[in-house]
Length: 252
Image 1 (cartoon, rainbow, N blue to C red):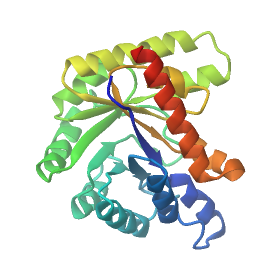
Image 2: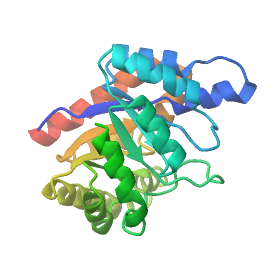
Image 3: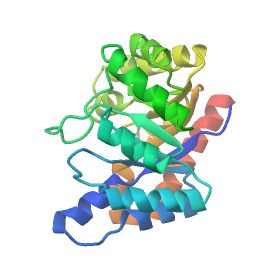
């Protein structure tokens, strides 16, 4: 079983910065710390309303990731504006996500099946520019198949429902974990690389990391919150250790 990569999402460092309209804390500094302590890449979501990450942040993140030879995963909605920004910066990867202005955070996966005609041309243009395209989808075989059909190279499975079920001690947790496993298996069968993310914390990372088809986890909000208490570097290092432990146990 291959080593599981960790992408650290630094969006909510920018959320704290923007709450006061100051220049700090700096999400780019957070990205540099994350890379220094073992993150395999940086994830950032540039939203239409710019509620956290800004255009200037993306400019700087693209530079430091390129300088350090680490991937920038640019999360974005399927819109002409975001496509243009991705094509201007040429990040390693672009993860296409749903976006509604009134939501607090991404509330579910992208409806790739329903949006095929709009999504496929965007995937094609980004791919032709050398960007690795991922679709952020719920753990649903139809959405996984649709991601393959639009030309994506990667699917990122939405783990939010499972993580919420675990936190609330819901009996649905086992079923939702089973759905993640089944979707990962199907994605791998179709030749897609499989990632996962959303809502993962220290309690939920073990079961997710143990899914053998997964190549990467993208984790942000929990790590930024934990950093308040123990520091960003130690928070990332502990998450990395829990991922590696889970992977080792699963391979044994």
